[in-house]
Image (spheres, rainbow, N blue to C red):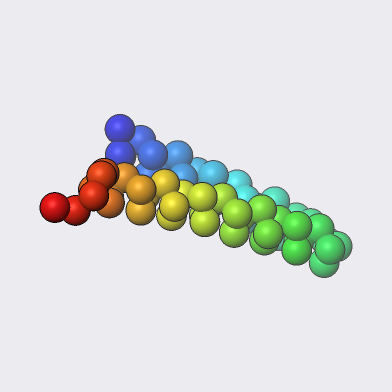
Length: 58
């Protein structure tokens, strides 16, 4: 499953890159950047939650 996630993220990243460079207005590029940051932050939080042990350390 992890390999599939990596492949999907690569494809999505390439598509986002293509859209970013196709957009001419700076305001729209800023929206794309903000969206990408939100998605990456969410993924980092999900990863951190899956790595941290559940419950109190004991």
